[in-house]
Image (cartoon, rainbow, N blue to C red; front, top):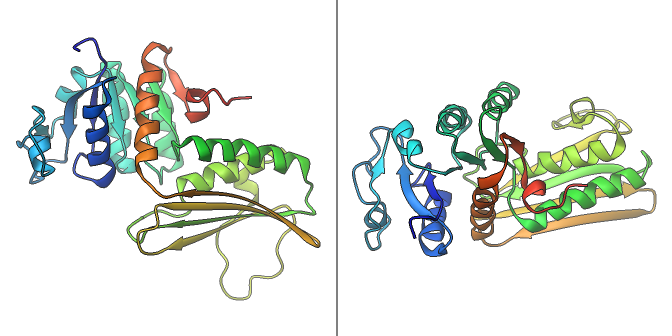
Length: 271
């Protein structure tokens, strides 16, 4: 049992944090060796299982990432950009696999993560489900097959507590479409339409975000031509699929060389 990889979960009190903790504890393929929360959080010092309303798990919630990461083989992180950048450096020091599901990362955040990947394995993805990563590949191939006569729109929907837009998954899909067309997403992204915006610019990739209720995640990639539309769609109805993907990534990364990877690597879907 002690030979199983030890995993620390950051943001332990969050919805994804709690789901990850339950999944790891029940997995039989990994050990939960740490549960991390911010200093001053009510759960710090308590057994994570009891804090979640269940049976004790023998792991105390703590607020010192350096100490927690030192005994881990992997860190699974669905938190905030600033926290994730800090964790990337500390996980690299500990040579622990860092699985990042955090979205809303800015360019400077990504640059810092890339530096950390020189010293440890980092698996970063805007979405960790098999279905979404298949959709990414399909989007790239369809975009490569269709010219600018087909407008590309990415429409995403999430729950009303999501704080960033477009979603990380929507940006993954936009990047795939841009790559398929041989262009940079930064050059063709259209994220804001309000008022008299003028006609749509040929070749742009548009984004629309819907926020409401408890929507787990829905993503459509629309290829709209004259007289026809092709719509690729993924609907997530259960957050556990993201936790399963994250655990899979943490295990996959154990024997890999330092570097930055994504779920296409984990799932063997890279071209």
